[in-house]
Length: 331
Image (tube, rainbow, N blue to C red; front, side, top):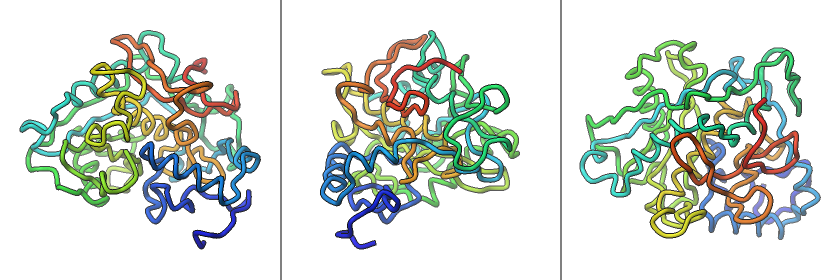
């Protein structure tokens, strides 16, 4: 589609927006745009006919039918943090992101936090038809709530330096390597798993820094089954563009971007585990995309209290309330 072409409600796609991280890179599922890119995306939509009325028709998530029988993480989520490269023990973590992310995923699901509740409304399984926008709570498996925390394992892979600009193939292979490291060598052991490949400061995975994204998620096939993974750059390298101080001022907000951005990708992996077999809009947006970088009003990013502290998080889209929710009942 030509950049200047008008878009109808039927053909509007996220990847058609030239300012979207997925433009020309459709493997970047659920990509968090930089804050500047998000402003350009919204302006382009406005100028090219994607009016508010049209966009509203696209703010409902529908089930994609699943891939290999998988739509959502319909069990207890298991997050494996993979700190990619020897730089992690040699000055590649100047802001303490490794500890922060471990605490975040340990805290999720504890202390009565209801941020995770929004995701529990989404389901999969053979009784859920493609195109469904609601779930029968009585007979469909839903996204699980991580009541004992979501963190399942941590690996500092320091055997070699992380590439200066890791390719998608290298990131996918690191997820495969991580699955082997953790002993997850069957499809069953990876059914509710996701691998977060965190690159050290000073690196540019998939062009991070010159591209217009903060992170994205995808999956790769392997002899161990389908492996969902996140490309999680060292987002404080881009400062406020990727969320530094988005919720909290001063030193308290230095790592806001890590929890906002990684929380975005985590939530999207739960609800669209193997993109796009899970829950997406007609335009290709996921639950986190619809609520990215909201600074005030309904759905504004906020501190979410967990059993081990509070973390800056963005809201995610809730079909059953038709809005971005930072808190939701656990279903």
